[in-house]
Image (tube, rainbow, N blue to C red; front, side):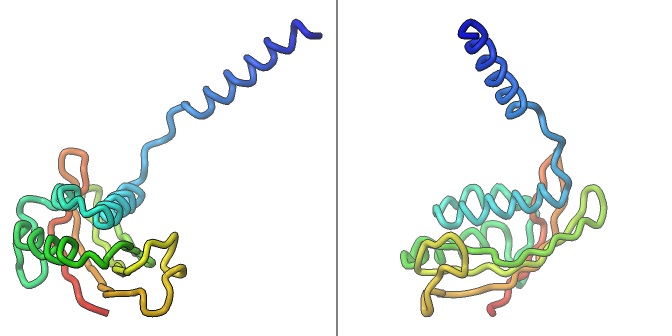
Length: 154
């Protein structure tokens, strides 16, 4: 029995590792877009504007026709000058895939003074600002990019 125990443990470890590393199916377009938004939210919290601008197409058009560089400047001002923002939340997000290479989304984004696991963990008075963002995306070279976005305060 003792001779079989290491063999049995090795087999169990092999099965677990194989199961964990087995390739999963590709993400759906909606899942890819949700993952892109999640990366942008984390980048906003970490003040990594490069991640956000890389998610915008070169021909991006923002609120009131703002270019990609103008939106980057607005984000720079919002996130870099306002050190009170430490949490960015996306409590609602609707994604609609219109075609294999076109989609749009609508979501609420909340900037808060505190880091919390969810918007429910933000105490009263902890929210600095909240925006509804409607955006159009296109898939190019296998990656989803924002091509147009509008934001309004809530």
